Length: 495
Image (tube, rainbow, N blue to C red; front, side):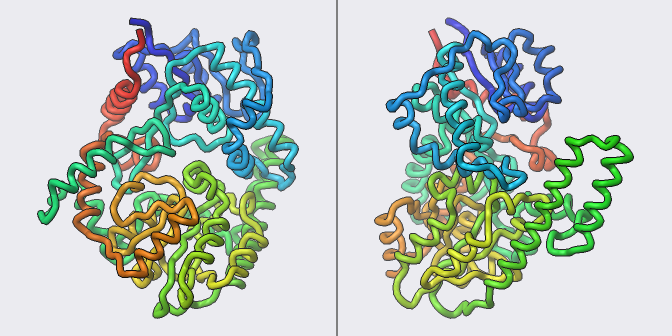
């Protein structure tokens, strides 16, 4: 039996190198290619001296790494471009994250798309991997195109999806297809649990019970973490922190960075971005007005951009305005759509100015039956009185069904298959979901509990990011062991 040959395109944390080493040492894998942070070069070179290491920085600049001179880029033709056309629009939108100066034109976006198509197809043909292993759904552009080309060439992929049940991550071969294991197990468990009380483990109960409480108690862990982490960095809506931040950057630039042009340019555009965010927030506030929670309405929760959840997991609805537009044409007369921006979108840690514009909010506010909601409302204020909620892929959908309100899901999420969640990616699906909800559809809490229990049964105990690693759900060593074992199960024996 030959070794299982793999590419790891998302190596940004040391433990992910340890996962690769565990696959090699315990399961006989051969990791031939890494993409990741340059600061991890030394550890990767030490543990995998024969592997190619491609830095994220080099890939963004369309640079080929040392050792890949023999890789022959695959020429573009109609067949290749047509096969991957569904990914093109999403990739172009993903590139917002790199438009730090606001001048990333169409030509500057399509050129790397074409480069990545030719490079990755050539690299896959050259290295002949059996599988491509992601930590999470690809969302940085270059890893997304590798995923697209891999799918086209029938090369298996595996990745993990974090859940709103901290410490439980779901292994899947594709974020688009979700977990077939969970889907099958859930259907089976629903039949067994019919007319029976659903018993939850203490771990799952501890995750779900707070979601029935007021928002302050139920706020997701990752949001609490970010609020605490950024509490001393100022809200983007305040002018004084912006000025202090700019002054601090200048002092660091000249006293510590010795006037580095790269640092000064980077911080200049970062500070300009903060000012743009401030104007965006002011514009949003100008358009938003208090709403009447007594009328029938759908609560539409926007998501932060640019991010993995609104980008990759959003699919074609990476353009979130399309979700609102479709809804406005599907809801009955007399209903409203209340649209609220994500509470973190205008924080200093986000890059709202790279993806959202005045026109984005103007277009949404101009749609019939649609109103923008002030940021002072919490998501629970809007969930509890709504006929339904809607999201591209956010946690608000899960919070909604747990609190008894059905949700319309336009993208992809870990809770796709839960009863009470209507997957609505077409006009017909959206209209049918609204029709059922208008006719009195109610979320069955036992079906939601059953889904949570199935997720616990079929998930991996561990973490794939810094935030949840700090919860101590498992030791670092156990996390590596669990992730490696889950990955190995996804690839049949290679003969």
